[in-house]
Length: 87
Image (cartoon, rainbow, N blue to C red):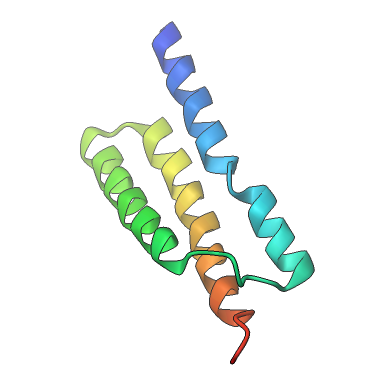
């Protein structure tokens, strides 16, 4: 494997796990008032396109890391609506 592949894999891993601390905080505190649902939907759309791109190019690091990000962000959206305070 080339050095550039390692850089791409590392970038994908860091990007994929970047929202895990936020997700854990939401689950623990059951508080999502300051989370932007709109931002999450835009991010999900971008991740969906990255997954599609990874499928078309048969680029498994892109496909796997963005699929994981899609899962984490889907959970963020789920918990954002589940724990949304009703006014």
